[in-house]
Amino acid sequence: MSPNYALILIEANQLNMVNAVKINIEYFLQKQENIPLIDVRSPAEYKHAHIPGALNLPLFDNEERAIVGTLYKKSGKESAVLKGLEIVGPKMVSFVKEARKLAPAKKLYIHCWRGGMRSESMAWLFETSGITSIILEGGYKAYRQYIKKAFNREAYFLILGGMTGSGKTAILNKLKLLKEQVIDLEGIAKHKGSAFGGINQDQQPSTEQFENNIYEEWRKFDFNEPIWLEDESKSIGRVQIPDEIFLRMRQSKVIEIKMPKTQRIKILEKDYTRLDSEELIQSTLRISKRLGGLKTQESIEAIKNKNFSLAIEIVLDYYDKSYMKGLNSRDPQTLFPIKINEIDPEETAKIIRNFAKNNI
Image 1 (tube, rainbow, N blue to C red):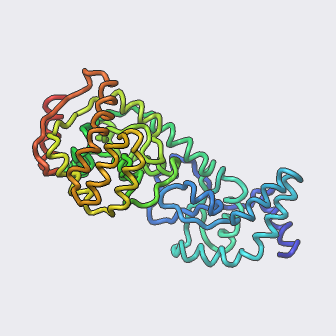
Image 2 (image 1 turned 90 degrees about the vertical axis):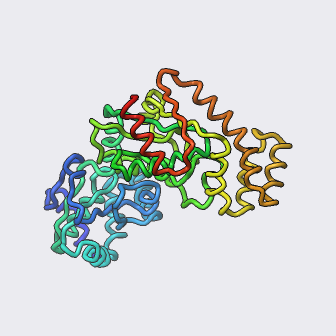
């Protein structure tokens, strides 16, 4: 890259010659869906967590970002900027070509970490090539601060409880089809919550990305109406439920499904007998200290012999005790038990919805 171009770009930034419009986070979240959102942070930053729907067009790759960042700390901003320009120069044409592919209408939203030099530099480049750019003021950091505050909004939760195997997730999905407001935390977490919950699931997001994905549901809600969630512990696999939501969950009313153990075993058999036996064994071993050596071996032998109902019954003894411990820590006045013998989640969802309307 020629030194002349480096000087031109520095002067353009200093003289505020970047023509891109800047909008705050509230306007940004009302953005037009048909206009692409470009995240110009490094691939590692994007992979860790990003705004849902954002496309990654990094100004620097991971190594380049480290080089520029180290130079900034050791030698100051000017040296880091010049090094950044030296890195970016050869890639400018490819940036424009890629942006035109992503934004055929020649209009895009753009952000970096704090809405600073990375997004402004890319916006300058796109503007000079005829692509209208709208910068998120404050960048991804502003988005994160905004959604954390948004989770503090007053909301009326209804918690769907019940021992393992009660079919809570399937019921929530049916409630959603009945036009109820639902946050499927396990679905968003890519994990079903137990030691067996990660089998056949996609890789879990980071906790930060988990929060971002929850907000995509949160922002659509009518907060004058109830929001349904499944009773969960603080952790779902490797991710954590945001404190702002979890604390409210623990204080909310719980519709507790009371279902016979025989019915729960049937539901779990349907869910788990299609899974690989070796993965079931490994998951059983992960709770061996809590099951005890004898129970662990009995369960593993049952899996090997395809006697899944016995294996499930053994494991349920542990999970039922664990569930009751959590339930007993709640205020009894927040608990609303309901007996369910159905294993049809659609019919159960209708029963539970009517129960909530008439009793809570």
